[in-house]
Structures are given as C-alpha cells and as structure tokens.
Length: 102
Image (cartoon, rainbow, N blue to C red):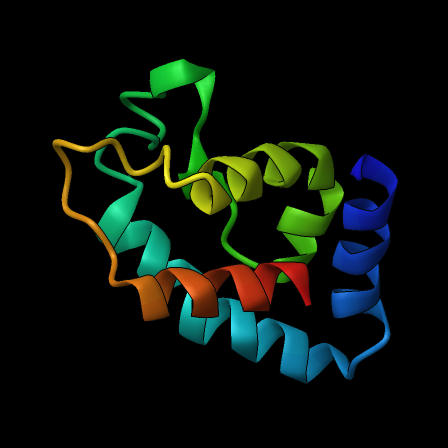
C-alpha cells in the first residue's frame, strides 16, 4: 500500500507537465487546505505537529510525500477534518484525493 501510494504520488506530479501539476495543486489542493485544514494545521497551531501551510506548491508537497501519505489516509478514512469541524462534500473530498493521488 505504502509503495503504491508513493509511486502514484510521484507519477502524478512527475509524469505530467509541470504546469499542470502546479495548476492542480494551486487550483484544488490549496483552497481545500485553506477551507478545511489550516485552522488546526498551520504554522501557529500545528495540531499533531503538522503544518500544512508550508506546502505552497506541488514541488514542496513532493519533497515531503511521506507526510502527504498520512494526510491522504486521514482524508480517505474521513478522520480529517474532525467531526466537529467544517466538512467537505463527498464530491470535494473525492476530487481532492484524486488530485493528490493522481
């Protein structure tokens, strides 16, 4: 499972034109993080010692793909955002996972 995720993640961002990967990250991932994640996982709060605000580009996310594997796992299991927080629609969650997983 872990190896396949890493391969998919790398293929997603390395086998497509750099502009497309950057656009997908900028257009889909960053707004999702801002809306559903950064309240608890920014530079100041770092809940779970996780600062997602430092990932400002696909390239930065790729540098720390192991951390993103955990993010994807929590999103897929619907453990994040936590139940008390604002929740993305099922479609938006699926779209976010699709962009990150390729």
